[in-house]
Length: 381
Image 1 (tube, rainbow, N blue to C red):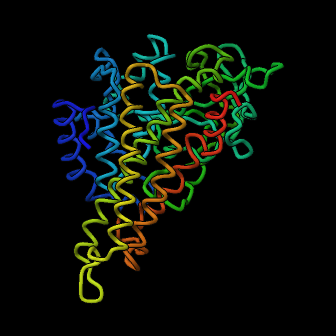
Image 2: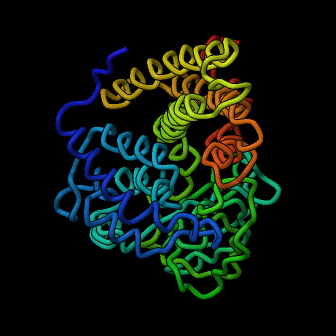
């Protein structure tokens, strides 16, 4: 079916992104995957073509775009290329909105120009060793002491934790009757005494995306590094969930489309029993089933993109799109790997890497189960 959400500007930007990935990312991606992180120099190169600054106001060096569709173009091209920009996508789609929404003018002037240029890349630290989806159970604490907060605690599974230049830490600054009260966002900058990065965690997939353990021991964070108001972080974390979950859905949908395209090409070339695999009825039916499901996912994602731009995408609807597309990706990539046969199990084949990468999409940005709970509440259950 014909897509109608993009215009000539989007497609022109797509070509710029695609050329950048072909030239500066794909040739080095295997090396980055083996190292467990991308070379930070690529962040500045991405900054030169405007990727990290898409939604940053022009006065701070960005493009000042309100639409999320240009971010979607980047996600689609990354999926098509089979490569990654590490924690940069997290910054542009998940971390940046907190700065745009809650930062003071002084904080914006301090951090946004570097973010737009790719010289500052941020991360966000929520998950703790004993706290996953239950954000209200946060154990990391920050005690006010004069003009600083004294931060103590540990975080884990932090995307971009090795390469980041600053990290937004969710910490408990007070206790109230409601467990959700008393959480605060503190921006901790690289090099702050007491802030330590642990090991770069070894993962099943997403090999080039650094994922770290972080520790904070008597870290003094200036009061001027608080994002928003003290004690209001739980509400802040919910404000960006539609965009965060749509970001995951965009990636999952684009990866499913890429898996199908790769497999269609493969079965036309691969021969068995004297003919191409594509001539077998089972191959045709399996790929036809994938195409049908992918079309349904594309319709959901495109509608969600329109609603996000209009400010109408609800947390429940974002959760629906996230669940559908991530579950879809797992089904599609499994079918496609099967059609690759033994070669599909070899890491040198993109479909093998996609299979490993796909699994976590049903966990991060809200597990499938958490998303279903949100959806059920919207039904009055």
